[in-house]
Image 1 (cartoon, one colour):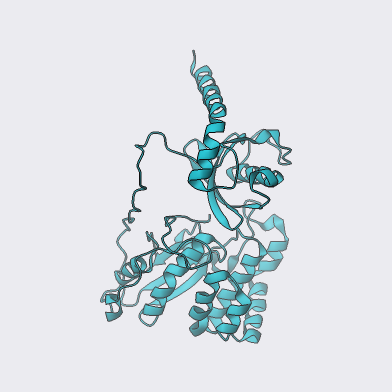
Image 2: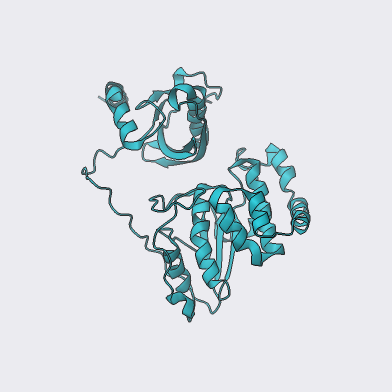
Length: 350
């Protein structure tokens, strides 16, 4: 049997076994994961999907969108009527992992690279079964460059769940060290979460430009539930000044015009947000969140305030007394809200 026939034979055996396991895995998936999406896998090509498969094949983004389209076309059966939305997609071994939101909750599902099969969850059969999940390990960060006054930049998309998680990590450290270091929130130069993300990026950018001393109050409110109108009032933001800044910034960087012209979108999928494009290119920013300290990209994991404080304090030539204070060692959950204890410390929108 030659190599091509062997691969095709192996593939057919795997798919055959998966079909036999479908009835067994459905209740296991629901019980263990609490996922609303039904079925251990779904043969997507049975659905009337409008996205055609070209001779060159579909990109990972198109494969993921095809799966989301299938889920929403059958949402009464698969999600109990809730609409699924795509957060991001990454290649993982022989499949694509898609991170999606259904009814306010987030899930990881998997799609085969040929765009035919959708799996609501995955299990590594080569790992030894454990009764308890292993504790999240701290990432070993590269050595942080030191300065007398560190420069700390957090790049986010304002509606990215992991960007919100990082902002919640950032805020206690900002309140502690804002007089000792240069700290600010910057923006990835494209968006993934519709027009509302452009509006919020502009809003947060201009608050930092016009009334930076009020930004922490605004952001501490916004990350709770995303109610920006309430947060503008609670932080006592000058709305007239804010509106002028937003209009001028929008015109300067041609943001809304580019949003309305899809021919300008990155890869045809992502509207541009050019305010910090020069910094994105300088540091090689590829997703939300990205932490840059003293001109070096630094990985912070877990995304707890204490871990972030330690990382920033290591960037001082002489750490200030504030660095002796202890903050929370627990990471916040992705998305809006102040829930803690999340294991999604390394997630990113990209």
